[in-house]
Length: 184
Image (tube, rainbow, N blue to C red; front, side, top):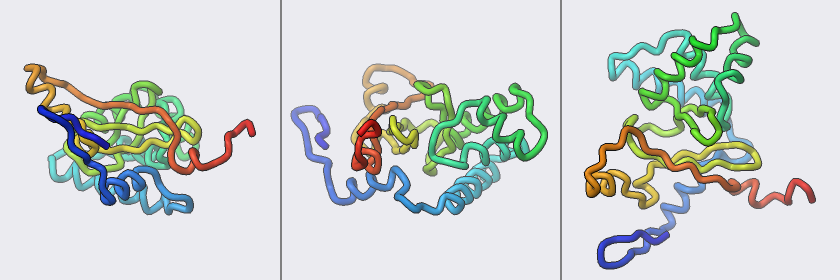
């Protein structure tokens, strides 16, 4: 990868960058229960550290998101929750999603009008890049600065104060890209 800088470019590709990029999507056979448990533990720790309450309702919504690495719409969350207890009202789910996204515990994938549990520990305001696999639906999450995108610097230079920043990139994850086409 090449990064633009005043007066030229510099090469940012390294073995470490490649390993980090490969880790954006879970490998085949990945223990998702452990992954989801880690997400929930990190969310609880974040809430404790910031004096926030991860109420049972908010936790249930986060658990519904943490079931997979694919984005889930609000009404699909309602359906998932209804299978294991009382059917929540849409406003209850939307309020929980608002809390989770405002505090960096989940992210809204605008293009899909859906949500994913946060896969990385980071500041809630940190600009992110989402890699969205068009075949399997999984979403990889990486900090924009980790891939050479200087959102803060660009905004500061323009005198612009961003409220949120996320770049959504559609394509195929490593597993899907290596698989034969679905129509073959």
